[in-house]
Image (tube, rainbow, N blue to C red):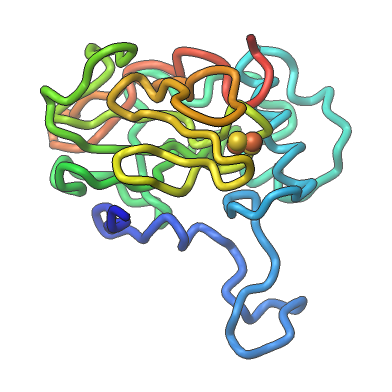
Length: 225
Ligand code: FES
């Protein structure tokens, strides 16, 4: 399995759980016991509603109409927020909020990044992969890649779990083993997901950091077909 590297000044994919094992709900021992919306355990109500929220945003409908009173959602979007997840010029940041430098990943590695926080939006998990530039083909929008980097939504298009595992070069969703090929536009190569993970157009800023040039090319998460 590919090692999950640290992005510039950042932390690994499995570090995105908000619980550090010392919250009021933890039994002690330093081990976190409850998932955040960014963890990969299936069935969490927060994630399902979060996926619905993302799908709603992807369809440019009103987030404020959702009724689920989950505090975690407000960490991602303010309830009145209806704008894009990314837009031209929004930097990608790691779990610590640090911008992701061009040198953050070696070829063959991946990490989880987010849009740089701004009014109305805090986090939206995005898979950033780096492969040899000539490895990309098929459904990959090459104009959306830069320096071997490609970025995709981390939210599975089947039921909204986080696509956090790998089998060789293939990205795997742990919930129902949906599989996506990151060098073929994150197209589905196994399991029940109905469509590819939407790709995010990225480029390098003049000072050498990854930034978006627009929003995801399609709806995020389940639905949106
Ligand atoms: S939620 Fe990803 S395969 Fe079902």
